Length: 401
Image (cartoon, rainbow, N blue to C red; front, side, top):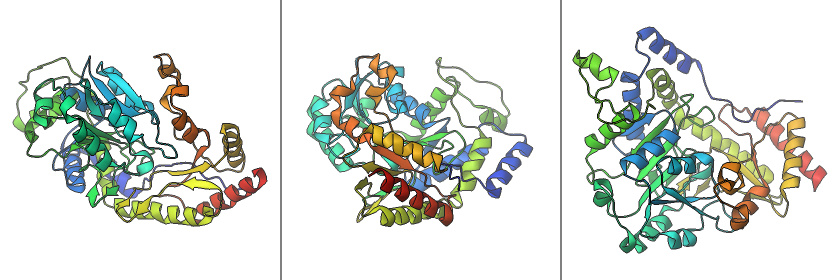
């Protein structure tokens, strides 16, 4: 029996050497490596400036705070997502408005999303699930259609002049859509570099935006720095360069910066990131071919005008229920293949049930979840491991159908 882990990090000698170099440099917190990593992310996403923080979650929360979102405001999001998409809305005191899935898809029902926009709506958070970019044409169409309802609060909202589209792209760094990179599509985009993501810094995230020319680039970068460093006007790296200890604290803010020791891992990953993505697509093609005649719903990772970053490989057992899916999961695990489930819709979780959400109000999200399974698929996987996953999947499938 072969053991196939779900998503081990793709770490090699270059990453280890990069971390060693930082540790030996005497500068391990936010400094030159983090600033260089930000520059490379901005260039890669075609967005100019990027900001690196401790997680996608911190990037999303700091973005909401910079946008001035707070009590009496509403933020629209899908019910089918991970808790991080929604928890930041509560953190800033706003009200989350959850939207059910469009029947047969993992994306929001965009008609229901548009209908939910009102004078309190300040932000929409689409989720690029599994590394596949959402239909932003439809999302921005809805924002334009409802523009007359927008009531800005504060300078940033006045400058943008409509509901902001802030992508949860925790899964989709490196994805492409309509000739654009993920990051230059939504108004603001937040990425994750957690250990299970395609590109990792162990923990970490980045925020980018496409509003160049409409907002002051330097000013908004400084706001991210203030929000992520206790509201202090000068970080340790700046003090070192200027040989000055003097600083001020302009507000009681947060601590969620990215240190150089983590940015160094990301810089090393950049050198081979496109090859890592190509490997994922080789595996997706292999899986797609193997499963094409089975009664499954598979995601479309490539098309005429889009290419995912191949982050997750979903299968749905059509016409089956959660009991079938759970038994399938167990039988795969017994044979050494570690799968996963992405995700429980938010109204199924205690934190959200306790806030009044009920999964009965989101039947299509539940229908997508109940028979969904995620197979192991990552850039460290060998051809032999992939074939073992396929063979094992087919054997279990044949035994249960």
